[in-house]
Image (cartoon, rainbow, N blue to C red; front, side):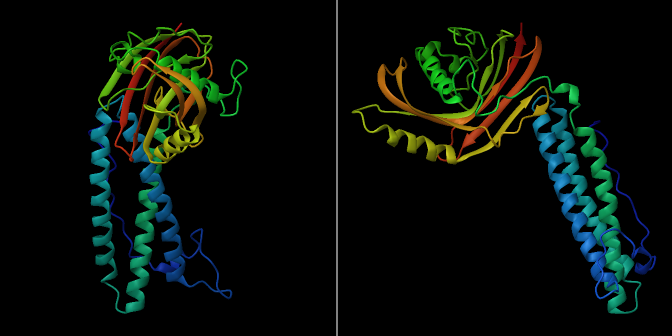
Length: 327
């Protein structure tokens, strides 16, 4: 999509009689007759819902793809400006067209027909853009394991526990979570699952990492961990605490090779487990929660991965990009 040109606004001639559109799909019969103005209002409302859904889908796609293609942020801003201009033009045009009518009922009918036609035309324009933003099927060179799928004979919760045990086995100054380049991503990766880590802060992180082709890859879109810093208490206290924090997750996004990944089933918890935290020099029960995606072993080649999210409860967020080289 070229950022310098977007969606021309079209002037429509809508001075035809509303009755000439009575066969527009969506008209409903009442007692064998068509109430023209009400019929057009129903059609316009239906088209308006479709238009808004398409428009919002385009905005989301542009926002997600702008992570890898910054020029699309400009396109997104121009689309918003164009949509606002279209709304103003539509209203002015329909007010002008209906002002030629001599009765209130004709004026209402003409204005409704005008709004219906403008909405239908704009929907067609946005649908073209929407189709252009849909990623080609061949870009989906990855597979997501289902949440109940066993990996190396273990459920997902076990791999989440082992992720935390791996991530917290490092002192703070050598932690992969604090790594800004990816130089530490392969350290101690001895499990059947390869762990990609998030970030310790909200700054944009870009890492390059080499991953073996025969291992599933675990991605932490966003996560939270609870562990006692003093006397031990019942583990369900930690579980409830991290579950409540995870309830506040928002702005979740995962994009792989420009393909947005559905996160609706990505929520997962570790349950209680034993954790030796080298950062704090503490050992004891812990519990974690978050949004996780487990990728099946990837085919050799490069992969561009970006994930981000935020917890409203404490403001924690992460914004991480990986350039994966699968060998």
